[in-house]
Image (tube, rainbow, N blue to C red):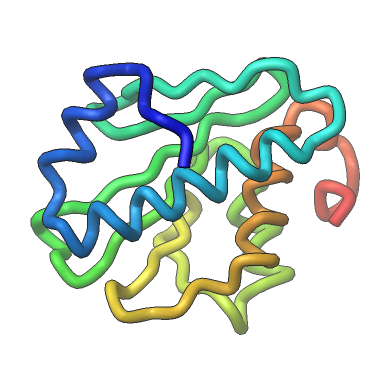
Length: 139
């Protein structure tokens, strides 16, 4: 797993409960791996947005990952609610993922993640600006 270079991001991960920290680090690695597999992906920035680990690229829409004390049995991957991302994900993967409105895919802390499908969601987000005109984002 790649080291977290941004010390502020690393500090946020350190404050999560251990079992959740492992799950969020897994999501982080999926984002990093997916970005590295995308053709033409030149830079993925790891930063904080709204105090949560966030992943930003010029070609795409920001992805955030977080756990909330108010919902201790779940964690989530957040997407920009002003995009068609979650609507597309719901259309394609409603039988696989649980969603929170038009902004997140939510995971139970004991849930097994469908990695291939989640990587498709990550890929669509990281390349959103080049595919937002396509039906179903080209999925």
